[in-house]
Image (cartoon, rainbow, N blue to C red; front, side):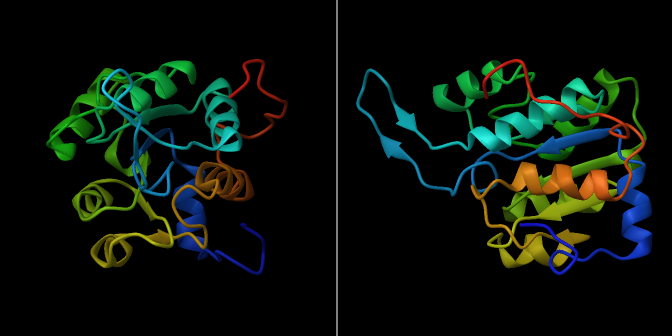
Length: 188
């Protein structure tokens, strides 16, 4: 977990974290440990998600941070989970994350690229990291993603990375999240 002894960030990175207005995130290998199970024809592929990550997503969104999934995952499990968290599902199952990122920025009022944070784990996230203000990789991300990221978390995919990220944004005194507390009204 994030603490003063782990996941240290430089002053320059902390300043960039303070300015984040839009957070995009990958699903497989970020919100999950990248494991899927086949539950049969009637259900399809399923995954395990952390309730605590869901609560972090809800808190950040409720505080006014724009929180949007940006993923190649197009499973029913991912769609239902994102809907439950009141996240847009328009950018699930995308093949071009850079083009999708531009659509997301435009849809959210033209947020400057420098005020966007993307968290992910795959090699397809590396170009996104380079196109945004802050690229964040999970600990077990692809080596190319870790290399392109401005911040590599100590937490692995599926290990409450959104909770860690929220803590880091609050520690950096993110302008959107400042002064917000409370527990989600919706069970994540």
